[in-house]
Length: 594
Image 1 (cartoon, one colour):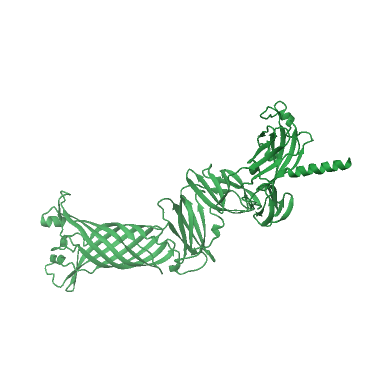
Image 2 (cartoon, rainbow, N blue to C red):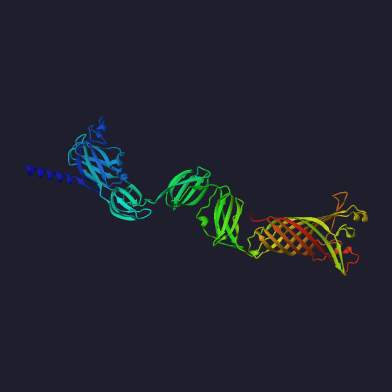
């Protein structure tokens, strides 16, 4: 009897072993009837009123298929069919519980000689088909268990930032990152990495296409607050062009230690800046406003110099990066929101050389600015002093001129209009115009511009002598100086100056006017008999003083062109030369770099 039981057991085992057929790496194993109470997914509670039936309206048996080494997403692609004697059917319950216990529920007709066929259906990699011959009779409303294993392995790679993290695969330590692990079964595995006080754990699905796991950031982290003006800006934090965090201001984002780019976007306007996260990182302020890129250049003693720059907004809408303010360069490029700023430059290696400049950034402002530095605690030659040349100016002045006949030992002064009846030997007038005086090196510079001289004169004696109403005279001359200038610099906006060169004059208009009618006039034909030349040239010398935006100049002009026709006013002009002399005092408002 005992021998008979042993033989029957061996036969049953043989039958069971013959019931498994494998193809494509899938294999059924471990078939048995469940003897325990149905807890958790309680079948009796779930189907007590409506147990599933087959096509013959007979109650089914339940086969619970536990998937092993299957990625969950791939397990959902399994399809089951039943073949065998009699009528057989298969029904599959929904997979909502699959992520909890990796088990699929299959309802089959009860009976004997049945086969369960599993097919993996996918448009990509297929794990094929396998057939299992059920070794026992299935009873209605009984529950059976079987395992469907995927017998495939692959090599996985695991990385972390930073490297050196301890790696645990399904609870077992397998090394430190970066790590390559061979012969890892397909399916879901628990992967945990630990580095110091930081750890990260996740369930990974291993397949041939999913075998690299390097999304483990174990750096220390810090909560960083982001604010913006205007608020409500969308904040995007990227690292190496990869987005790692987003939010809407004001907000706090947890970021790992490292270097990042931050962009705030509001109504199409952006603000971007570099961000270094560490233990000292505070609130990050962003200003998505209209901006402009400008260049800032520091100079010392008239030359470009390597500098450190700090830029301070007057309304607090921009804050310079602390690291950037410590950079040393001859040219600094900044992208600033529209507004007003104070720029401070310090010469590298000479902290006593400092310069400040107030700039305004807008759509029409310059794209580059020069910040002139000067030494604060040492003597220097006046031509090396920091100086704002103020190259442009508006001129208003007083002028007077006369003509001098020289010859035969005589010198006769003549105002060029009234002859011996003139009440004054000078013509008097005022001057307006524009000045251009660029600075060169060693205190040298140029002075030029274009001015208009307007002379006004009258003579009652002339009218009485010649019985005429034309007793008023007006003349308009254009004046262009071409001077070399030397400045003695007293400060950044103060200087004494001496200048000299050539002055060119053109008489554009001259006319006698009636004292009874302002519209009645007789024009002078310059260059004709008894009239001066239309063009005159003179050698000139002048001095000046600049105090901030105000500059005063005095100029003496001594003509060297001969006014040949003007000598006709003399009874005997032989041996005479007629030249023009001129004095002017000019008051200018000069425009500097600030």
